[in-house]
Image (cartoon, rainbow, N blue to C red):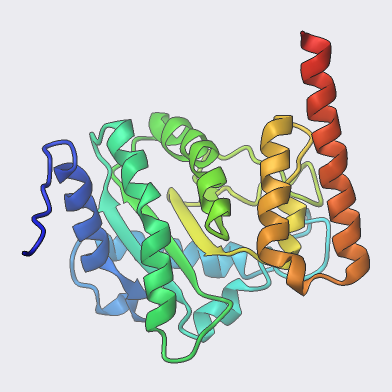
Length: 248
């Protein structure tokens, strides 16, 4: 007997958003073929920003090279994909539920590629967000989603025009400040140690981030680096337990 999948009223908006995401999928090299507005203009604005800012060096970056050295290779190798959904007037819970489904989409896209690529990236544009919603729907959403994405071996980048996130190498640089709001999903990489275990992050989350990093990267790390990160993890756990004991 075939199982019947029941779609509850609460799940219908999520299913609708996921269908929009599926229909809007295209490679960054093929956005000129999109004739539907406002999708085509959003994609064009997003790609223009990526080319002008993300793919270029910056005097305040704090290191040599492009803001993201992997963006241009990903674009050139047809490994950068765009998608979008209508987030205007979407309840926050529905919005989060929709974005929680995207790791499985990313995994499917990776499996469908003729040639596997570590550069595969998926840019998601939530359409219709007002400027006064950026903090909640981009920054706060990122804080909610990041632990789940890391559990899946993925990193989630959050970008919008008013971002105040500081650069990893320079406190005066704002690498996440984009012309339009978007998220970018990609596979976790060795250099992501730069973006986790931050001092402003709660200890329990720092433990989670380091555990996820080691789970997905330990086999690729030099022995000395792996031992150093395991030592950091042990230190964070000791700090967490010590803090809990002190609070009792």
